[in-house]
Image (tube, rainbow, N blue to C red; front, side, top):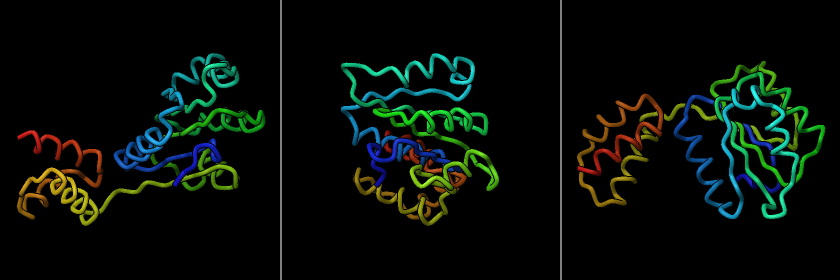
Length: 173
């Protein structure tokens, strides 16, 4: 339900990497016409001028770009504040971070500003993983017992990314 055209700065944080990657994939799928660029926070901080040039320089061929920043920490907060002051247009930024403390500067920035979107991704429980696995198997017409589904979901440690990898492996057999 995130409209990347209205909310150009989005923070995904939490320990469920699989769920975050699913949401990023959905956003990119809905915005196929837009160019997406992936950065790691370390790349940005090492070459901040290159990052600013890419964001601030518009292109005649690309009306809108989506930047995805992975492994973000507190260090990126100052860059985000600077971009907010510059009021950038034609650019959307999705920040993918691990767990952030309640008092974290990055999380606080996104939670207090009404123009920014902040979404937490917590570990999935066994019930939700089981539903995802059952739906995956049903779509592919694979018959498997509930006890085997439970074995697969127990192996995933609450991360649906790991679950999807395990299910893909099983579906190949």
